[in-house]
Structures are given as structure tokens and as C-alpha cells.
Amino acid sequence: MKTDFEYIVLGLGGFGTAAAYWLARRAGTEVLGLEQFELGHVRGESQDHSRIIRLSYHTPGYVELAKFAYRAWEELERDSGEQVVLRTGGLDVGPRESAIPLSTYSDSMDAAGVSYERLDAREIMRRWPQWRLGDDVHGLFQEQSGIAMAARGNAAHARMAREHGATLQDRTPVEAIRPAGGEVEVRTAETTYRCRRLVITAGAWSNRALESVGVHLPLRVTKEQVTYLASPSLSDFQPERFPIWIWMDDPCFYGFPAFGEPGPKVGQDAGGQETTADTRTFDPDADALDRVLRFVERHLPGALGPIIYTRTCLYTLTPDRDFVLDVLPHQPGIAVAIGGGHGFKFASLVGQILSELSIDGHSPRDLAPFRIDRPILRMKDPPRNYMV
Image (cartoon, rainbow, N blue to C red; front, top):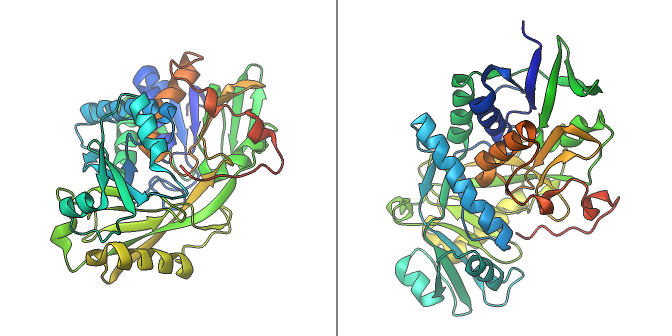
């Protein structure tokens, strides 16, 4: 059995399957991916039917990065012959005086040359009568926003990684990582593998993986949830009639048209309780569910119906909620990616960037904001801000 590879990817969720795919496009059989659970498991952050993809973001840097993200997904679609992004348009909506000003988003899109529309409450309700809004509410509409198909995208990355020659092994926990003579050893219960470059995409298990190389980050893991509702007006919430949306205030809510289930999906962003990857439960949080249902009742009453189900996932949050996307300063043979609870829309691009860092030693993208040694990540008890 082959134990020496050029590249090993640790963790095969959204980022990891993408990294394996983009590495395999260039390195073929020299790529090994290791996953501690089964492929497609629901213990992490990147399954379910849908995630939001959008060009509307709070800094010009993220807007520019999102442009590249669309291109990376399009390349996967061409290569796999499978659609993984569905454009529905996207509505950022909220009070004119809010904790998340829409001007931050409009200014960022202006700086990045992205077109959008400014809408008042009356115009929002004219276009989408599903909404109930007061005059104090306004919005931004960006037509390219939509749905990144999470489970389907992960499966496409994994399938195409294998087609390009990569070996993907699930149910293979890694017990230790050790630099060895300019390379990296990765030890499992059965085998010790060796590689020239290691990619760590371990999500909520990131600090456990990094412990072997003396790194600990001030990450916070929370259990989040989304709820699918059996709307009595299901036709009103089809993707061609209703966009993805984000309520820009604190609390921040978000939602999708019906996709993957016979009803729209809603959730609260970063509203969950702190947990760990090992101690989390899959039980819904009744208080969080109540907050979401009260919002829906007030602003999207036609969506309210019997609960189809509530699904939990994890966020792995950096204190500033910016990504980690870097190589270890003291171990340049190891690259790390952490998504901060809003990374899936960038997953294919992140995989591409990780392949560039691993194969070329650099990426043409501006990764300075995502350095693993930035000041806030060196603090023991940093201030935290999760608004994106």
C-alpha cells in the first residue's frame, strides 16, 4: 500500500474535498485525503442541501474573493458536468438603523464594481409580497446571489478528486502529525503516511490537529441550526419566485427558498451556544428555534407552517470571523484553512488556494487578512465580533 504522497489533506468536509480536488487536478495520484468519519457525515459544518453564495459582503476584499469563488465553482461544474450553484438573486434587508449597516455592503460592492439595487420597503414588498415590512426597513438586491449546493458540491469535489487520481480514505482518524526531515509524517492507528505538504481542513477539530505542531488558536465552536418549514404557500417560495435573504441586524437571520425539501429554510446566524466537536448534541435549541419562528411570523408569515425538521451544524469561529488561510510560519510544509462559519460559499476557491500554497508555495490572491499569526489570533482572550 502506498504510504508516501506529495500532498495529504486532513479533513474531507467542504474545504477538504475541494483541496483534494484542486490538488489532484495537478498532482493526480500523489494526493491522499483522510477523513476521521464517513464521507458526507453531518457532524461538522458543510453538509445539508444549501448554503448562501453572494457577492454582497462587508469588505471589498471579500467581494473580490467572492468573484473568484464563483469562477472556481463554475470550473468544478464544467469538469464534473454537474450543477452546484443555483442563482436566485439575494436580498440584504434590515432596519435603516441597525447593528449591521447596509452601507458597509453597498460601499464594498461599489469599490469592487458590483452592480446592485437599493430598495425601500414598499418596493421589496411589491416584488416579493411574501415580506411584511415597516417603512423603517430598506434593502439591497444583488442578482448573482443564490444557493451553493452543499452536499452536492462536496460529493462532486470528492468524486472528481478520485477521477483525477486522488486516494480518499474515510473512517481514518489521524492520531499525530510530526515534521520529519523537511517533510511531514501523519500517523493513523493503522499506518504512518509521509508527505511533502500537509493541508489541514479540520473545522471544529482544528486545534486538536494543530496541537501536534504546537499551535493553538482562540477558536470558539458553536452549535447552530436551521429549520425547514412546510409553508402552506409553497409555490410562493420556489427559487424562481423568492431569493435567498439575510436580515441585517442583531440578531441576524437568513433564509432560502424551497430547495432540497418541500419548504423554505430559515436560521439565525451565530446564535448558537458554545460547545465542542466531541460534546455537541444534535438536539434542537428551543430558544433559538423560537427566535426564528417569531421572526418568520412577523416578516414572512406565508412561510410559517409545520416544521419539517431542524438540523444542527457547527460554526468554528475566529474572534474577528475572518478566515484562516495560510501556511504555518514555523512549518511552511503545513497549510491551514478555517472558515469562520461563513466559508462554504468560498469552498472551491479555498481548495484552489490551498493547492497553490502547497504546490507553488504562494497564491496570487491577497491572503494578508487571513494570516494565522495576525495579532488577534495571538491573544489569549481576544475581543470577538461575529457580524459579517
